[in-house]
Image (cartoon, rainbow, N blue to C red; front, side, top):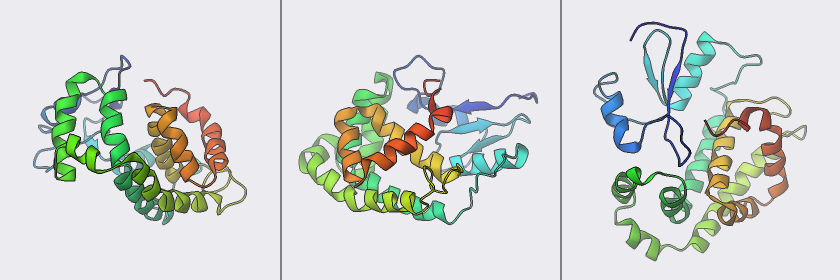
Length: 219
């Protein structure tokens, strides 16, 4: 690829008519440029020099290196592994919610077979069987202590609304991605998650403060 000033961003499309990679297209598109990997994921970017970079944190680190932000995003902050540990447990518990909700409400039909096959491998059984054996009520209950731990982190700095007061950092964008994904799934899913946080208002204020970065969320 010829060098240019453009950064090309690959991601998964939802039902909105945006230009992006469908799940079955990810590996064939990226493997020639990132050979030998066990898994190919998005987001992935092509940097102006033609280099392909995969994984959000690696992408952020390189963008910060080439295009420093002020203040810096602190992508190596000790807050991040602490937050991501709690978030991983949230997602593990919320599987009965999003394993069905994502394909039904967000993905185009071309992705459904791939989603069902790969996610069945993750949970060790067909998704229909998994959903029958795991209720959404149990899912929200299991996620509650971890969501409340995230709430406690968000409230540690009383200057708010972000994790570090009034200064936005990498951890804020990670949390924004989580909240916005589940909000996009629908209010019937988003509201129980907000309630499970123990303090819905602090997360709603967080989202409100993020509007300058999230108002362009459809492309």
